[in-house]
Image (cartoon, rainbow, N blue to C red; front, side, top):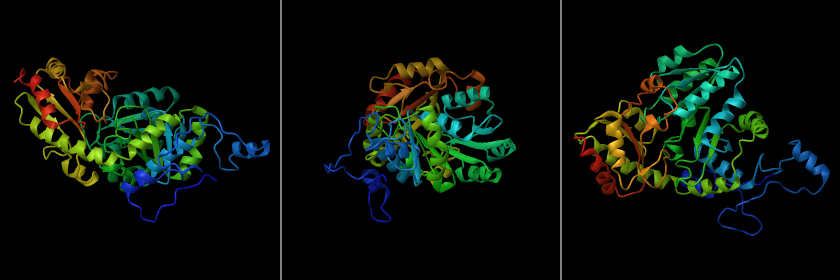
Length: 399
């Protein structure tokens, strides 16, 4: 048996974030060990046969499982409040694994039209294999309900969405999914378990791009799916063994250490993001600001209820002058990092219509509200005054 960490009953999330995983090795290390190995040695052929047949729990090959990866999986599961977790090579690999593990030709998915551009493209690509997807309004449960078919097996939502921070009613979508006998998957990338626990609100599965806030410093690519241990063992692990969407031990170790500071980072970044959003609302060149912490946000009350009263660290705003105006603001920055990644301690800025949503058609972007004048900022731990001054350089030329 693979041993477990022994912690008192009722251990709280911040303690789980630094303690859950595997017990120390015989050397008694306090920081988690990094197991860089492709395979594991067995005492004899009969034992190896039992382990490869899943008759005896053990590590056999790092494509199937690895102690460092298991530590990260157990920690994230504990933080999300699930009994199981499987790590993947990226956030998109996590969604691919969900499709491979749960869906077959003839099945149907209902998905938010406001989700991440690559997510939309991936579901569209699987139409070639007979998996059909209907895209609906993120915020209108009636559209989700109307899209349900007898073949619907999965509802997929991202809350808040990238980049407009639209918030879905997770409880309402869970009720719709379960009424059909389908599963609800929530992409919890923007909030992470530090702010939001979708399973507590009725979701069945939670997926992550660990590349973002779970790592927190822009170092590695990673992903994960959290859910019931039985479902993970029966459906996801066999698909992982065949498809090889595995997370490397080194990347798992980096994310594992990132989880230790997740809560304090995200609280600090979210506080700065709200302050920046309020400041942007006062700027003449800014037509609209999107951040769940603003009272002007259409789903403000819902977001505060689902996200523990915190709006998150990502905001977007529309400037005058369309694409030209957006590029002018971005190009005038001297502190912000011009990159489409987010979740870093360094504040980043990007133009979603030409980056994260660049592969979509203009009609799809319009349906998702991704206009050419939209700019997204993922607030890091920079001084807020420096970021305001950075944005002011470009905004002053548009006023």
